[in-house]
Image 1 (cartoon, rainbow, N blue to C red):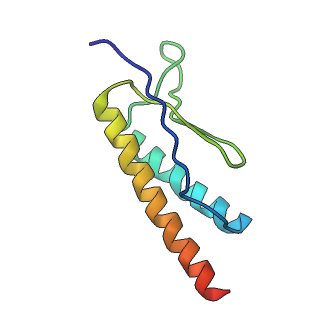
Image 2: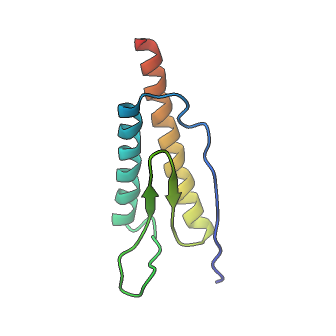
Length: 99
């Protein structure tokens, strides 16, 4: 099967959110991805044979996801990002209510 690279952009998950809360949401996302990798649901890329797998790079407010280029893996990534957006929306609404 030929592998392809899928690029996606998730905008609007976190709009205006305070820095500590944003960092918490990103930490939860990182743990969700690592959990999927450890359960062998998410298949990270391996730049070198026998080397460590890379599933994500988290920057200040950017995210790059890496995975096997199959439709199944895209579905896994979409599911995790959907959960992330849902969680971040809950915290955004909670933060707005507390203001």
